[in-house]
Length: 406
Image (tube, rainbow, N blue to C red; front, top):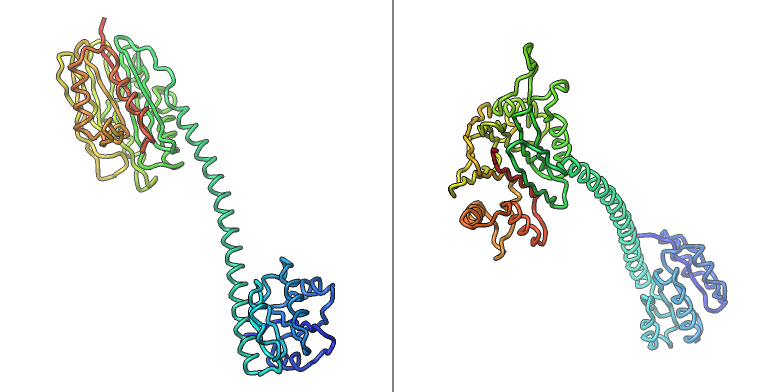
C-alpha cells in the first residue's frame, strides 16, 4: 500500500480524531488543523501529499468557501483535495467537484473501506504526478544543458570555419604566362575544402585542391594540417621539394611522389578520415603540366579549339593503406587552353530547373561555354549559379587557369 503525508483540515472545531487514527493505522503520516485564515501558510509549510477537508455538521457552504480559498493558492493547487461532507449535503458534491483541484468527495459517516480505496488512489496519482513533474524538470535541465553545449559547439565551429576560410588564398599570386580565377563559397558548416597556388621556383607553379571527408572540427583540423604541410619551403620539410647537394640545391618532387607521401602520412587508421586531392606542377615556360589525382573530381581541360578533355589519371582517396598506386600523367598545354579544377560541391548545386547539377549537366554547361563567344572566366558562370542556391550542401571550390604564353 502506498503511504504518504496527509493533512486533515477541520472546518468546525469538533476535532474528531477517528480519521487521524485510521490513517496512521494504515501507515500514513498525519497532521490535523482547524481551518482559519492562516491555514494556507501551514499547508505550505507541512508539504502534505494530500489534504482531507472534513466537516461534521451541515455547513456545506463553509466547506465550499474553504476549498475555493485553498485552490486559489498556486502552491497548494496541485495538492490532491479530498472532501468529507455530511450525508445530507452529499447531493451537493457536484458544486465541489466543479472546483478545479477538488479531486473527490466522501460522505459522512465514513465507510473506511471506501476511504482507504480513495486515499490509495489519490496518493498513487499524486506520486505519479510528482515523479512526472520531476521528470519534466530533469528533462528541462537536460535540454538547457544540451542547448548550452550546442551553443558552445556552434561557437567553436564558427571559429574553426573562420580559421579554415582564412587559409583560402584571398589574392592569387602573379604567375608568368598564366591567368588564374577562383571562387570559394563555404556551405556554412566546417568542411574540408582547401586549395593553394604557389611558385615552386621561377618557372614552375604548383596547385593543389583537397576535399577532406565529412564536416566538423576534425575535417577542418586535417585541412589546416595539410595547409601547413603543403608549402614550397625546403627548410620546413615540405613534401613538395627535397634538398640536394648540387645547385640549385633542391629538386621539385613529382606529383605522383607527393601524393604517395600524403597517402602514407595521413593514414585512415590513424586519423579516421580520408581526403581527395588533385595536385599539379606546370612548367610556365613550356606549358608541360604533370598531375596526380587521388579520387578527386576530374578537372576539365578546355582546349582553345573547342574540344574538352578530362584529367582522369587513376587514383584512390588518400589515407587508405591498400592504395599504393596513383597514376601520374602529363599533358601539353597550348596557348589559350583553360583548366577548371573543382570540388564535388559543384556537382551538388541545383540548376535553373532545380535539378541536381550532376557531371553530365555540368559538362553540358561547359560545352555551351566553349561554343559561346564570351571572354568571361568560366568560374563566373558557376559563381552566379551558386549565388541562386537556397543553401549549399557542401563547400564549393573552383580554380580556373588559362595558359597564355607571351
